[in-house]
Length: 545
Ligand code: 3UK
Image (cartoon, rainbow, N blue to C red; front, side, top):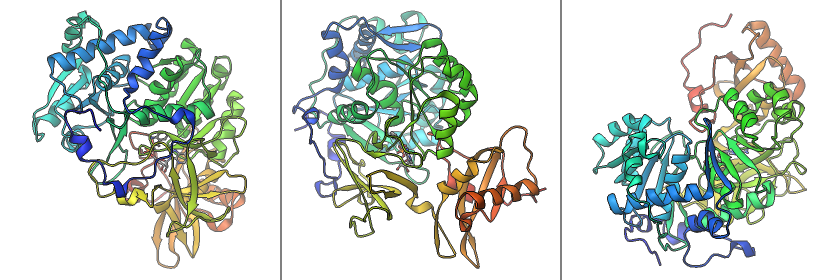
């Protein structure tokens, strides 16, 4: 039974018949009925006498130990409960770049029994308004530098929003939350939540339509820590984590907060994550473990010499398919084999992956212990190795959309269907093909856009590219490539022809892009994914030189 007083989330769970099957097959996935994940991740470490270990780092010299973090978390939780009247089960919107205070606010909301609703700094008032309405949010904690869009969103929200602004958490910073924290030095007793109470509403980075909120329980947070990190990443307590994904994206939440806390490691939180910022952070703070997306690794490879001389030892790529060319480029630049992993907001984190030793170019990896995965046809029948079909997954975490009809699409027959087309080989490695709706059918051939992109990326003139199918009278669809050139290369008809010939020499010739256009930058989501629908909608091009 829920311990929450406010049953908003509980009342909006998908009906039992639409839930995925959950698997808890290993000893580390046995959870007691009552559980607050922040007690496990933070308070236990301090009780074990490790409160002095370094925990959160930030540029400019900020260093919070585990004990320092717990003190901030408790102060914020006191403010939430005593000054804002937070009741267990209420939603609290969080809005900040990746900073120690953003991390502390997330932990405080959850420790107090609230439901964290983290939002990406890039979101504007329209998107924030949709989130406020969907999650029926009444409280917000917001970095004072990002207050404007949230205020605009709150202006015409369906219910009033009480928002406290914060700065660094220091009493003299002048921000409201920081000043309120100074009034509450006493420790905070964690709310005694049920293991299956929702503690996080993670909005999907979906590119179209009404946003979907995925619901995650206290036990899901700990299950994610017990699977991929423990079996694939295997971090050490002296590791220093860093990376680019926002804490509002579950890739970032896991990699840059939950997983380091779960092993007593530390994390460098960076607000700015250009390649130069990341390299500087890595070098200055002895970062060992990096989380970012495939394109970012392509850009970072130029800093190979500095990175080779740094403490960096493990690099995780997720969010989009990792082209074999990028894996190779990174190995040549840094000597490090990338750890690829596919995860999703619905499943919280990574469920198929391979560590450095098991990595195979072109494959995402094998199913992470704790999960089961297979490739199925339209009728959910498992397909034999070698055949392309829909990826189906189940494990200790799974999809629960808050009050949303689209639950029936993601979950069928107890399986989570991620919307990805995959092929499994005889060794159990899963090979990504495309999003199921991004398979291009040209003259009867199935062509996966990422395969064409991977071939183009092998050409030295290509910085980035995106491939789509466009309507064609004779062939149904043809392959069209949008190419961003590396500095020092200029668009020309001759270069376009050279790239087309190059693809024909790399992969089956029928897959080559019959249309090719040079553009200055690819449209991307806040989480770094190529927005193919926007490539489709680009205005007609000027004639190419
Ligand atoms: C795609 C990948 C190929 C795939 C995420 C790690 O990306 C994450 O969550 P989202 O909800 O998107 C999920 C979809 O993104 N994808 C992600 N990783 C890979 N495709 N290879 C990969 N390695 O289409 C998937 O269905 O934004 C990733 C951890 C947590 C996450 N939320």
